[in-house]
Image (cartoon, rainbow over all chains, first blue to last red; front, side):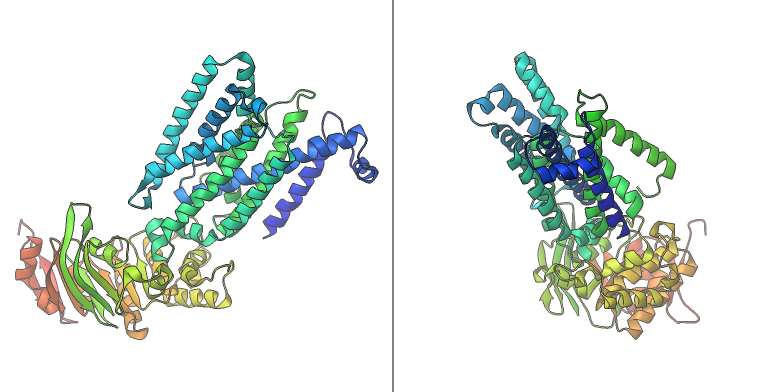
Length: 328
Length: 259
């Protein structure tokens, strides 16, 4: 329980820090006065139109990806599973590719880009699901293998499209794939926040199911858990979280894999704490990485996926070697 | 309490349990024995609702187990499997998982009675002193006791055990079975266990069901089932059956090939 308070405190701290730091430094005291003054100054714009949306989105996406990671790792009892293992990232990338190449954002609205990403993700998820269901039962190994295979196929198709596309399109595609928290559309930010937080609530209905599943599916059945229904619903929630995250922010890797493990090392395997702790740490991690990404070589920006990968990966390897394989 | 009617069950097309018919009355301690591959574990999986029968019915207190809600089933029947994965949780956390069938919809924390029940069950199995130890650091015998404790916290009327003495030394074999016998007597817990050791089955069970090639070969008291003719017929190995001087139950002595 203390962990949750600590994590919330760190979250607020990081958010405030992120508001202040940037290519233009805005000290804390000034923020207060800017809020009082209201809209008008350049700095107000930077705070509320650029930085705050990124922080909120970082919280939503970081939380969503970590939560999806916890749900999937609990469902598959496999520590290497992460949200993108289901092939969702490949499908979303494919959808976005088609959208960019067909110029749909210009012909219709800019909202078609995330929509196509979501549709692409959804299509892959449906494929994975229907290819893995045997006689009404969701075969867990089947899901993993099918997901990985579909991921490969989608990546190949994306590369095909990139090979035949024009340079301007290519730039758009690659930029999207690298992942970014920069999103001018408030509707999408609110949608992402809503989906993430609601999913966290829904996941809590399954915390005991997840605890029981950690003993194995047969054992969970003996404890009275309806494992098929639980697996199906967890699958849907995890897919929704990942699909939304990917369509709004692109492919930001490592968060869904690394954060749950980290949290597990400190709070153990009880999902009642694990769910919210992972959500919070995911938010913290992503906000931190994003802040780093936009300040380290200011005024240029690194893609946030680069930072999450390098930072997350190295921290994880370090922690792993230090603590041994004790609490994995 | 438990009634199996005309059961036919198996995996895909390979193995079938045929025409299984038997009843287990409340308060009985019944053992299921048979050679490897005879269908003992298949039968247990059918009874625990893991395997769907091709034909026949399994009735618990008169109700078909496939028509009972899973949580109801978990409150009446508890299963002690053969070495499940347990992860790194403490013994207390593991035993408390047995209360899951009793948690209501939005309940997140265990109630006081849940904690008390778990405590009582750990005391019964002498695992209370281990309650904060991680499960993966327990010895084989202690783990088995913890598994029984978890099954007991489900407050079942029927306890099903799959080879509870596998991989245990004789100290722990006796300890576990003495415990089960005590629970059967004191708590009036009906017990159905799959055992591979014929002598332990003879010693502890009031009734034995001998399964061979997917069918019930013989059912009855240990003296009726464990005769050298029947054992040689089923296990295809020469044995001598004597009487245990203390309990007067049949005791099987193997006859090795070299004599």
